Amino acid sequence: MNRFRTTIAGLVVGALVIAAAWSLLRGQIVPLFFRPPPTGVTPGVAGDNFAADRHPVEVVAENLAIPWEVAFLPGGDLLLTERPGRLRRLGGREESFEIDGVYHIGEGGLMGLELHPEFTDNRLLYLYLTYRRGGNIFNRVDRYFLPPEGGPERRETIIDEIPGARFHNGGRIKFGPDGYLYIATGDAMDPSLSQDVNSRAGKILRVTGSGGIPADNPFDNAVYSSGHRNPQGLAWDGAGRLWATEHGARGNDELNLIEKGRNYGWPEIEGDETAPDMETPARHSGPDTWAPGGVAAVDGRLFFAGLRGQSLYEAGIDPGSGEILYFRGHLREEYGRLRNVAAGPDGYLYLMTSNRDGRGYPAEEDDRLIRVPASLFD
Picture 1 (cartoon, rainbow, N blue to C red):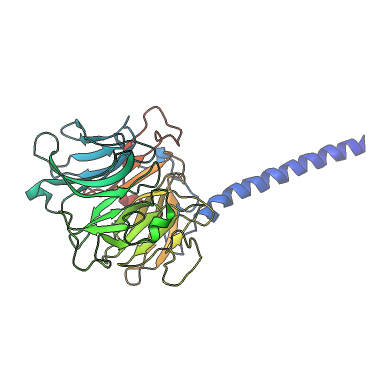
Picture 2: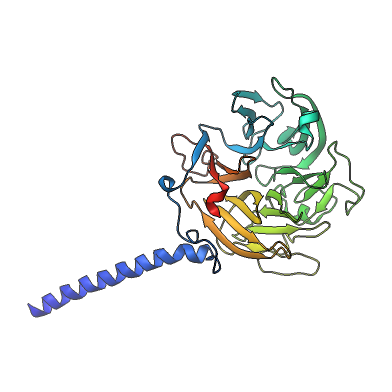
């Protein structure tokens, strides 16, 4: 009997020890994944998720069809792309426009959206989309005139025949501080194209607003940087440095500091690997997966969305050197897959979910555009 009681007591103690160890392990998984911020940085981010009922999240739109990019119109309305091929206007006027020629396949479709820097005067709008011609898949950037009333008009293609495929189409387009349009393209599932500077695949391209080649482009064509697998985000920090997010092959997702003419290694190197004349990332995910989407620069920080990582990531940037000072995550698994983050003119971060893209577990109201004050993360 005593032996029986001893055995039961031992089992109970063992169970408590295991439970305590598991609780401790669970508490340590996220801090290992999200590097804790340095001393003096606001706590509550490294492994301490914000619950939806503890921060002011506002739903701007819901029941969207795989939203991809957002732009802010003068006057307060928003434009938003949906990958199946729709451009939507939200705000004071609610409208939806079908974009001709979009081929929605896998990760392809209607993706990037950007307003001309002088949009107020010229009303020019740019879209990045996948199309099919002669049995082949390509991507292109089209320029439209957007009148004050109604949908986009007078399409002009400014760059086309960017290799496309079911996966790895890139898709982000942004005007830089230099007034040129930067275009993130994927390797179209052919890694060899990323190292070929005469191919537009696996690159960051740079063109004028009408599709011309800037005189100082490094290869006398549209290519600005090479060796990319599937870049998904572009943003410039306060010092004018270009940053890009990129999907890795087996983890090793990347945050890269982009410089003209540099080779970022795919498929020759990834993660911490090195090779002559190839760049290593400023930060990478190691064996974990961020599946990073769009990126926004706000007050010396970079925020980028995570699809598989289901998080909003934040990197603090040294204003002088560009060194990453800390890295942390927010909103982990609260809204599922996050496709994009954009800094609004109202001081909010606008986040897009991508739970209806075939890889998520959508809630009834998905997909959504939500916003949260950027100051929440100060």
